[in-house]
Image 1 (cartoon, rainbow, N blue to C red):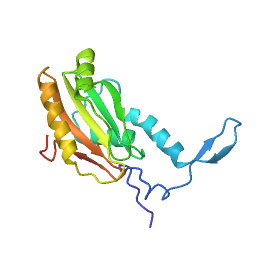
Image 2 (image 1 turned 90 degrees about the horizontal axis):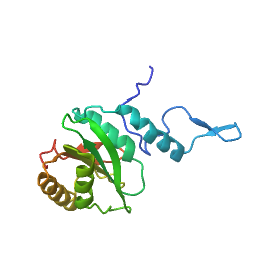
Image 3 (image 1 turned 60 degrees about the vertical axis):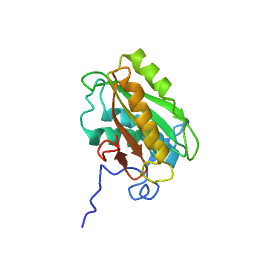
Length: 178
């Protein structure tokens, strides 16, 4: 029986060796086995194909897959924001903070300033949990509330806050925590 592959599954350390070996070409032209770092770097680049320029971000599964492709597998926390226009089409993706294993400093002021500069109507925030625990911490929920309030003052909507792990992504909006 042929094994079914889940093409929507995220690349995680527990399933990355299930497929065929991947190879990369060195500068000298020789091929060698791809390392985990090579694969993850290529996945981040490939994530751009999940959203075309000015793509609408109305599908929560697409948004979660996009952020998971960008942020899973990193050994430190990274906070990122998708800035959107009034039709929820992408203006820009920005990584706002690179932190430690357990935290990243996120400054709502900087997110608000960037939203004004880009003339964004909405944003979707995301960050990863290298620990693999997909649940929002109390600090995550407090940041979400604070950011939502700060953005509301300038008439920009916070559509979602996505928490990414190597195994999946959780939407605070879908869980009613926004």
